[in-house]
Image (cartoon, one colour):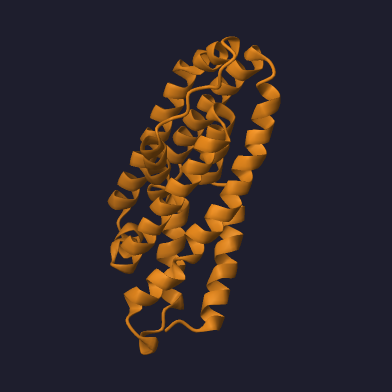
Length: 214
């Protein structure tokens, strides 16, 4: 249905977009530094699912609405920004729990699987970087003469979560290794928790004030 040339070209563009750190990458790194590799990797999985939900939305018309309606774009952006700020505040508030866990010589309590997946999903779905990319480019790689356009978009769109899953997992593993070094000292670990939270708050604030390219 989709030609190999179109698929390869879209995959190449997707890779270039994904490797430039954006909200999802920074959120994943913050999670790795704050609560470790396990939650960071779960966040990556949830984020990939959220991004593919964007693909589905673009395939069935939401992408066009987002690119043409400033109100819809702003609503999606603000929702994601507020959620990031909320998660950041929670991380800062509970940063001492990481230190307490180290003092008790037990690992920090990981988040519930569904909760961590949900957090990643929300950030992925509300990521304006990927929704604008998909809305602007995905329709251009679908050929009406080759079959149903939505089906082509859904197939092409698999490139984004697949590439993001691989690259973001790498970021999570690297950041998780850095966290292990910080964890050798309870004070370092508390600093990591607070810093990770501040990064999320800063990311959410930046996202809220980022305008459209048009």
